[in-house]
Image (cartoon, rainbow, N blue to C red; front, side, top):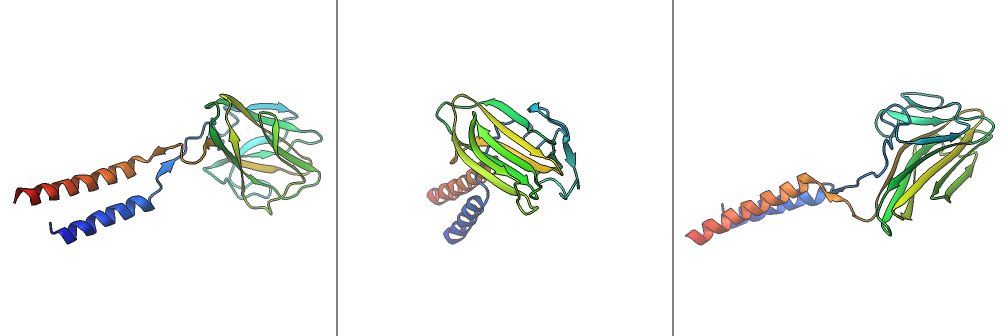
Length: 198
């Protein structure tokens, strides 16, 4: 292989590797997108009537934000809670995020908290009927609890794709990126060996 050809091959391999997603973040939550079709992994509390996991069109929502299933939250008169406790690293930096879809029903409310500290509290929340992501930077204590509290008397608030993951790159490189890089190094090594053998 000519040196110019080698440079082109290596440049292309690096470009593909750079453009590919480099990491995937591990979600510390169980069943964060409700893909079991129910609330497995979650703790429910309060007035949990009219709250369920659905798929496809429901109320004013056309479907899930992630996967096939999502939660619809509609207790009447008082709040329900949905929470999950999980293990993490003491002092670790995490991103707590979720997607909500709400149409401003009155009366309704929605809140999210981390270890009892309120991160979001809305009365008659609305996202304009589209899935909207909410994201917060939080610090782990070794064992933490996220909790949602909600009520929607005339209708439903939709919730999907709830996650807690390491913030700022604490994730693992994708195997495809490692393989691609390794292939480029092997190819380069083979050319150098041939050149030196002449």
